[in-house]
Amino acid sequence: VHRRHADDDQDTRGPFVTETPNPHIIDADTLTGEMRPIRRAVLSLGSNLGERLATLQGAVNAIADTPDVWVTGISPVYETEPVDSPAGSEPFLNAVVLLDTTLAANRLLDRAQAIEDAFDRERTEVRNAPRTLDVDLIVVGDRRSHEAHLELPHPRAAERAFVLKPWFDLEPDAVIPDHGPIADLLAGVGVDGLTLREDLTLELE
Image (tube, rainbow, N blue to C red):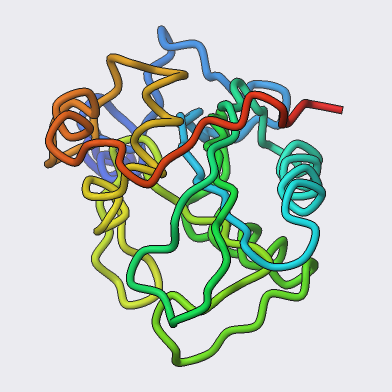
């Protein structure tokens, strides 16, 4: 009778297999049985074409309707003078949405672009051209990405008051990985060209 050596199974079971889930950690996604961590994500919304507020509200609704996404905060709405945009560009309405998600960053990006497309976003080579809708991923947990289609944290968020100020309103102690506290970044950037629109609100419907 061939007796299997005690080391025969060492590569698939045993204390040294790093892929083995820790049985003492309760998975945040136990209902599906998959080990998918919940990450906090920050999305920036903007519109300067068409019915701007209705478009932003529609984007919030679409984000909230996304499976495995839970919206936890919606910022006040700001009107923003266009930055580095073509002459004659209209002011933007901007807001920030906080969410928890078990989606991978690439899946979340796909969803953001699908929402833009649903609101007739036209993609051109013109830098900062007017658009019906922007849905930008600012941070997704502490994920870093330098791929051509996905840069995380967003490479220009630390310089943009229309991202930092509404985010600060929701999370004044937030930090952008590799850039520092948003309070410090906002102090350096200032809020010139930003106007709080107290008459406009976005809601979870």
